[in-house]
Length: 111
Image 1: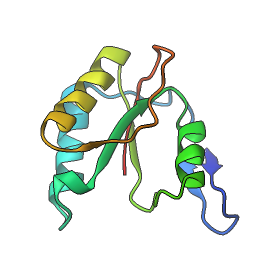
Image 2: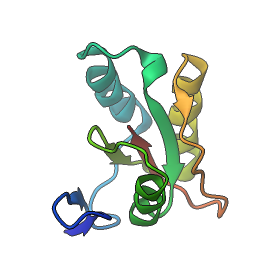
Image 3: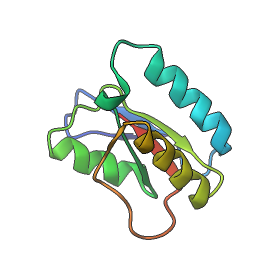
Image 4: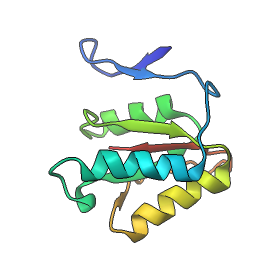
């Protein structure tokens, strides 16, 4: 297990790549629990897909984004990851604006 952080006192754990993968419906269920169990509305969350979570979270942290509520899931394939992202953006979630353009983005992340 690696860690991501710009601040040496605050470290975000990152699971090794391909440790596990989940189907689209399982990811949707977990996002539902995460988003709708709290007091934040869906429009207060951002979602994205990436191939390299460490690089993406480093870029977000450097741009001043609060990653205290970061969650991530490894999708079974790129199409399923993009499908999850597109569904929640249709429901009113914001885009993370840190999208991967390499066509291999299987990690769905939420903050």
